Length: 121
Image (cartoon, rainbow, N blue to C red; front, side, top):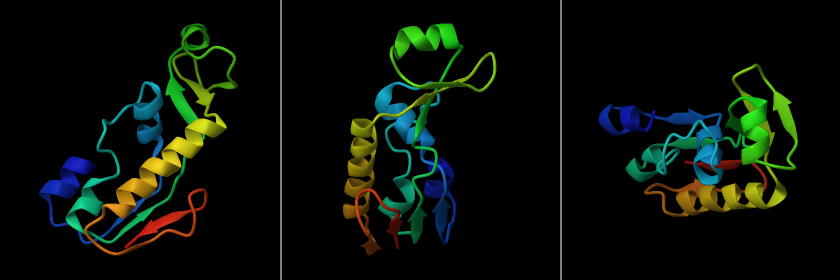
């Protein structure tokens, strides 16, 4: 998505799921890289960021996941994918990253609070 936003004439972005950002920050399997969620903000494109799916990391089979993330809450999605519940400190860190990205946006933004929905315009 970031590549498309950088290369195409995009007028607005509504990003409903920042799960790849959580995976990047905390070692999940579905890591879209360090710039996830930042291209539209850097270009000054009107953007709505919704912190959907930041409540879990995506990981592999349960046996492997239990070794990588011991003592966590798990949900076995299927034999190949396990969702690992994020912890409070991780959610706080994600909120901080999102806020920093909004604060460095080229366009104006509104953020009602670090733990609420963050809207960047």
